Length: 398
Image 1: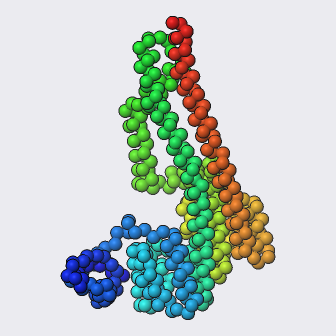
Image 2: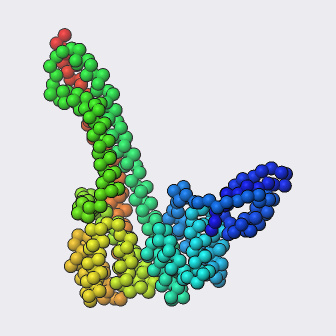
């Protein structure tokens, strides 16, 4: 939908300016006339997507509202028109208008969504396609919005649980740096004026303080940040990327949470696609497209190829899954295959691993903050011992 910057005059003769969406110049004139403004001039302007990002909540709300309108008997083009006029997010309004225009030109709804690939991923497109072919588009949209809502709530819980430990960690580093950079140097001047031999621990503390206040430390921090930034932005070495991804998977404590978080999303995606009528191999292929970790994606690709060759999913997970797909998951998948309820069992497995991730997060957040506080207390005790012991020894000599 065109986005206009307009200038007009109201009934009192005052000049008015603004920006608004309209389907055409004539439509813009009608919209402003309804506001008692006469249009003088207007020009199309480009939407800066940086300032109007589409959040997961916006997409969920759009799909859910669209499903409700279709359930009410509203035709798809009319439903898109209604939502386009109601949506407040400028970028999403533009996306819906583009999809609506494609649908009115005869393009299928799934193909129109596929053209907006930066907004709607392959899972959304394929579920919508199945819904169109089966005549149950509204049902598939409800399932899709439920799936996206569950995924959003899962990640939101992880982020919320990590806020307090991150704040505590930042506080720990700030206090530690402040002690070494501002408190210890005051005592360094006192020790240098006395000219006495200092204990090794005190010398070590003073050296750390001097290093943190030196230009070398500043250059080192700047170099590390620049190096990491350049590596992430420009270096596309597959071996290096694969190594960093394996480190994430096998990292102590966090590695298990990382693998389980992947399983929750992957199992839910495959289950939803199977419930929508998509066969197992295409469901795995579609779900694989949303995996960002290339190491895990390679494992899933091997499993898909093995299933395509005639193997069962449980056997393929055993042969190629390695540490990514544990034995308890394989057992659940095998039961689902034997009872012809694979989609239901995958959902239950996803619930099980989501519970494990939640418990791991709870344990980590419960134990991490006290450990940091204890470490900070020990550090302060060490500083007091290293600084005040020489002062007490000098006073006893006097």
